[in-house]
Length: 257
Image (tube, rainbow, N blue to C red; front, side, top):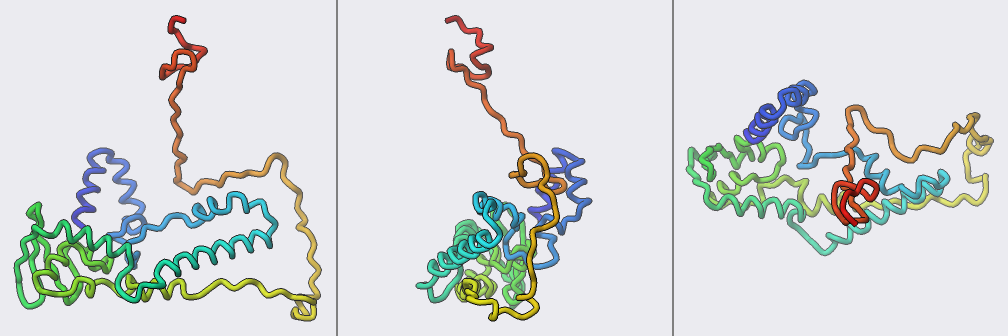
């Protein structure tokens, strides 16, 4: 939590209006530290953007082939993730293991003092002090309880108390939960040979094309930007094909031939 306010102070020193805007829209909408629920250490982006890239060519397909393309893509993703952990019996996910390893490296010089049977005071290399409770799985830095992943202060505390660090991590980060997330599969659609296999009210429907006119001009390929989203301008350096210089082109080149 302290790191967040330090960063916000830096933003305010650079641009006060920008800092005011971030505060006015609500800290819970764009920060992990103030989010009321559980984000599991993930800052999600617009899912439509990710699929927009995957469906770059498939967007031109008719509806049924497009849906089949999406189904096959999901099957491919689920299979690759399922195969990646099929030989792992227990433990934590690779991402969480890497986070713990990074915290292990920086907590070696921490000073740990026992306050009572449950709480410890941990002083980091900068001299800042934090209170850790392994029983409540909490730390005054708020990272431990917000992410359900041991922060560096909690790891230093666990090493002092001879507590297994992996046991302090939330169950949702275990291999068992990862396997369960991809245990199901996306089944192919059932082939219907005759209309007798359909419900009567569905079989009686006669589909017609929509009563719309095609708009003039070429269909739009690029997506519409969300409210408040700013398109980043691409900057290109000019290169002169005549003198090979930078900052001008052949038409404005003033170098002697």
